[in-house]
Image (cartoon, rainbow, N blue to C red; front, side):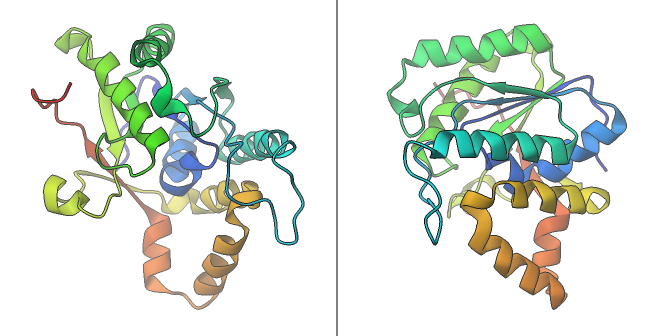
Length: 227
């Protein structure tokens, strides 16, 4: 069951980060009438895929990915998108305090009851990790009774071994079509994955159906040893 929230704030570094593991939940919140703000920190201008055959260059990819992100948000019913203007693959080099202040300003403005981001130490990509650290540090600075909940996405190989099984599971069966539309919107990066996905769905592959239907999060535990 997906709990109704006052306001959901999503902070992720790249266009398409939201599509894979959160888009069904975003669509579900919007169907409930819950305001959702999505702060996408970069335009993913260093994305690996330029098309096959090539349809983009390093110079044109940012605008292509911006258009794709807008289409994905439309598919999810999300109308409060913030493109924060940082540069792809450089977030680990941003000043830590500047990153925290960016998150603090978003929280102060939107007053969310729930924040969704990555789990520090378990999100693989340096941009993911830098985002996760900033989110955790910003919320940690708040008075405990004023902190929003933090749902964190984790997918490193050792996640289950250390964190255990996810304690938040959203059944997004009613918004799977919107999730697929969000994934397809990011076609420059997902074209080959979507071909495989659609082939498996045509075969009623149970693992693919399960992956699409259930979105998994860890409720962040405020470890005293994390700085």
